[in-house]
Length: 165
Image 1 (cartoon, rainbow, N blue to C red):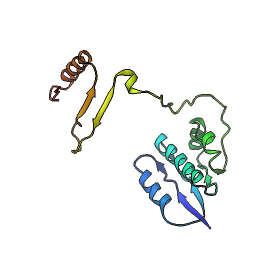
Image 2: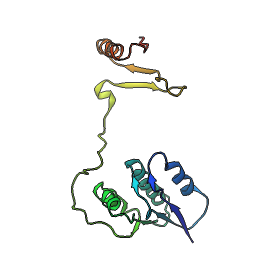
Image 3: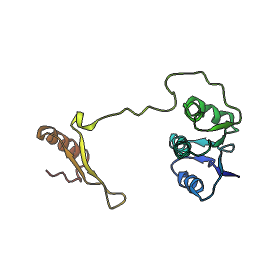
Image 4: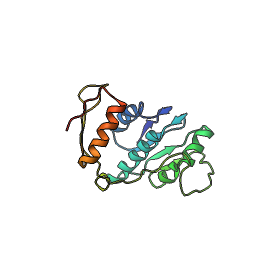
């Protein structure tokens, strides 16, 4: 039996929960991710779809099916972003895959640069807020001379913020 999971027409961070609920619903069988009616997908949605495929792969499940968007522009965006290249080992792709010239880097998505904050003396100990819409408390561990510069910049830009050390 094949389980169909519809990829939202507008697939982004606002519709990801809808996708995740249908993906995680109980049931067995092979998965079919149906994106034929998808009209737009943000990088967040594309990464979420890849993550779903990777989770199935890592769990040892049968390789899921993925129907590609029927909209030519959307399918080309998926190709230019590098999504299809990364999806191919995780999914059995169905539909017309666009012919996109192979490029090293994506002209649509930015690569995430690995950064060790300790190398730059930028260590955030906590970054949380219990109230929505308020600035979260931030503990920044840096040298005193850099801290004074940081506090002066914050005070100049946001006089209402409280800076203590």
